[in-house]
Length: 77
Image (tube, rainbow, N blue to C red; front, top):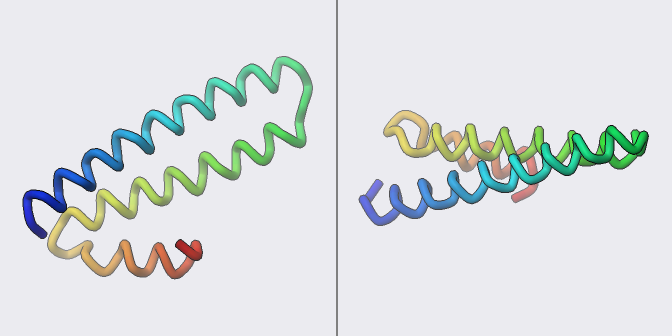
């Protein structure tokens, strides 16, 4: 994996982390409003994003190169 690819993956990881934080904040607001259905959907989104993030981290290591492909196939990316 080239340094350019690594830099791009790290930038994507930062973007995913920010999106997860924003979703968690939104979830907390909605829980306070008793909107359980929407909170459940946001929880699913957070789970998917965290799995993608874990896959991207694994892909940055030499042994994890195939993990991103497998994760993409599992989640239809």
